[in-house]
Amino acid sequence: MDNFTEHTITDAVLARMATVSDPRLRRVMQSLVAHLHAFVREVELTEEEWFAGIRFLTDTGQACDDLRQEFILLSDTLGVSILVDALNHRMPEGATETTLLGPFYREGAPEMKLGDSIAGTTPGEPTVFSGRVTDPAGRPLPGALIDVWQAAPNGLYDNQDPSHGPMNLRGRFRTDAEGRYWFRTVKPASYPVPTDGPVGRMLRALGRHPYRPGHVHFIVSADGHVPLTTHLFVKGDPYLDSDAVFAVKSSLVVDFARRDAAEEAAAHGVSSPFYAVAYDFGLKPA
Image (cartoon, rainbow, N blue to C red):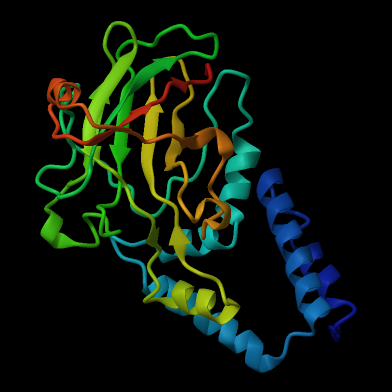
């Protein structure tokens, strides 16, 4: 019988994984154990701290339901999500950079006609998005699908605020024969990530603010190309340099240009003044 000590326990655990038949699972689990044990040794974790960690992870799981994913929020706020994204999406020149999916994506948004509004009756500053979807060489991708969603100006998504109605500020659009898209919405505002759960308690304990800069989410896909998950951020937002989930990239910060001409507003089906955003998405070939 072995008497495991602080000096021998790591090698013993790793040895028991040496015969795992799946080589990827073996590598991931052995690395996880090695780093986890090294962390415990480095900080000399106390029993009280170990139990507090167990309780925190338990609370995180219990905060998850079909409308909220607290573990994704934890991963986001620790910078793990954006690191995984960066490792898995090295983009060629001409392709749009990726960023986080976020915890509020919902499948099944309605498919709309180009030019429709995803905002319904949501009050806010009228905004028109337009641009093209292309390959990295700039060739248009007709029929590309753009799945878009955002928070309301009060900082809440429809699955956080039932008064917005189901699938509010969500929609899907198909590009035209020239790869063009356009749709209407309201200007997004910066907002805090949910702070009423264990992740919020962690942020407060660390002295970190919970705010994200104003942004709109996109998943853009087309046959023969890798689907793109990204955001577009509001230029000039005060939280661009301190996004709580580390997701801002300079290439995704866009100008919300104010337009005051009533004639131009009427042509876009919005009231004056409104904001215009022009952005072309480039997709990486599969």
